[in-house]
Length: 253
Image 1 (cartoon, one colour):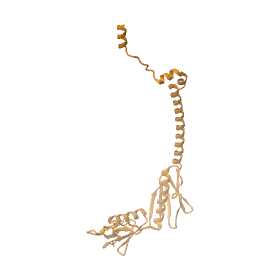
Image 2 (cartoon, helix red, strand yellow):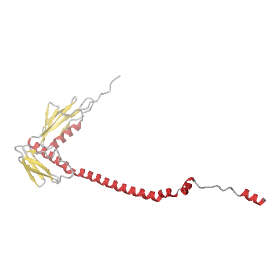
Image 3 (cartoon, rainbow, N blue to C red):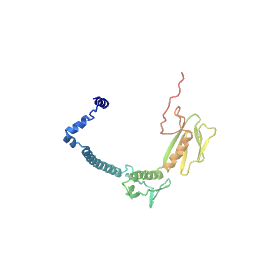
Image 4 (cartoon, one colour):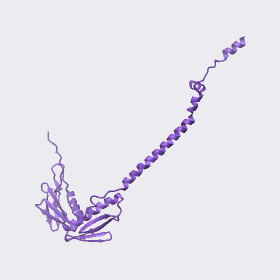
């Protein structure tokens, strides 16, 4: 009896470790068989595979639409305009080299490889050889603008007017050169490039003329850069049609 009592005291109490989920699985094996993990993963994989194929097809269609939009380029609004040839202007083309000669001078320009020029009924037409590229559209408008500037330049010319604003600011001609007094310790003498003529009126108005629009604008910009207009009193060299944004100076208390 003593041995039995000792073994009963030393032997621990064994409890059941079966969880509620395990009990449910034992009680209803058919229900858990329907929702087996392998079946779940198989259905999920099949769904994801089908979803991926649908997404891939949609993405391919969107990319195809975007590619089509990128390829198709409309006509340049500037490039499609004709360039009129006035009387007294001669036009000559040799390969890609265009030569235009008028009463004021002669200018040459080399067309891009994707641009051609044609003469139709006293007008010049700029034609694209490859109209599917966006760069071709840009070059189309650029070539037309440059050819038009050449025609207008050799027939009528271009003029830029500069105004000198400030006490003691004045300009004077020394032969072909122009002498500018712009508040420095010494006068500034500028020599115009070939094909550019300078005229001074009233000591404060400078007229720069020539048949090359680029050279006329460049020389005018060089003179303006000597003394750019300041925003408080507007002193400096400015274009005649330039608007200077004025600032309010410090006010005394």
